[in-house]
Length: 321
Image 1 (cartoon, rainbow, N blue to C red):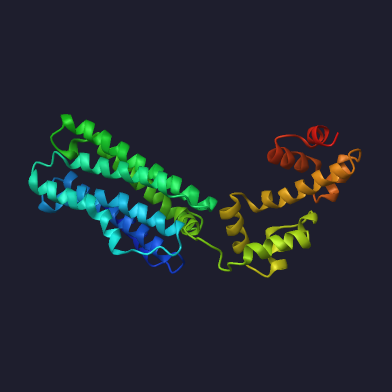
Image 2 (tube, one colour):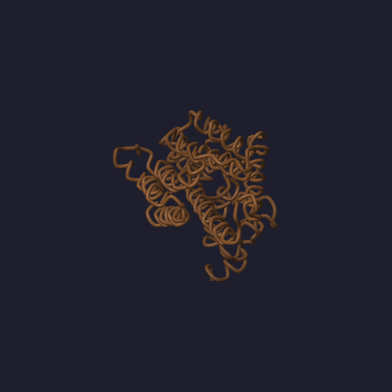
């Protein structure tokens, strides 16, 4: 538990110090990891048999996770989003936890409040937030799965604890703690190579490219220069043509088109092949393939079927008869 707390705290510091936009979204996600660090520390104390009044902050921290995740996703969806006095309404759950804790000292109500809070915010996120970028949509789904997993974990513990006296006897807590530690260790190790979840998360949080007009410039270049007719076209070559970093193109295509750069380029080639089929229905497919920018028949057939659901010959027979 204490190792998990240290790792979660480390990730929180990393996200809090990122200078990339949107900074508010990064800071809110950092707060989520901070809450996980607090929860893991308090759970570790409880499992170790340390009985201190501060332990009651563990369920209180759990009621902060839903609001923080929701505000984090709001900051991703709306670049101009800022915290306002109305944002304090999201503290109603923690306030209710404190008041009921004072009124019912035995803590029998705590799990009900946590489950209600997490469920309410899972529903709020699913029903009210609709990011447009594909990468941000994927991140929202991951957050929802994350919250649902927390709900299921709390239900498992609630069911198991009905027959146990202390948390250190819980097998479910051991499994949950081990899973969290493995997950956090995986994030750390892969992110050290700049390709792990933290790097992925930071990329998904971006709302726009650095150049707001870059999408229009890229589309205009693809239509006028038709670089996709070059069978040797690569991301690096396309970036040089536009005098921009490769990452700027890949992030734009990945986030806004929801696909890889190579598949996005092939869409232009497939559209050209279809145009040529309409213009000359009897022409050999190999010639059309080469003129559209493909190098090999196998790649042409695979890309065409992946995009249209049909082979080139079947599509031509159905559409160019």
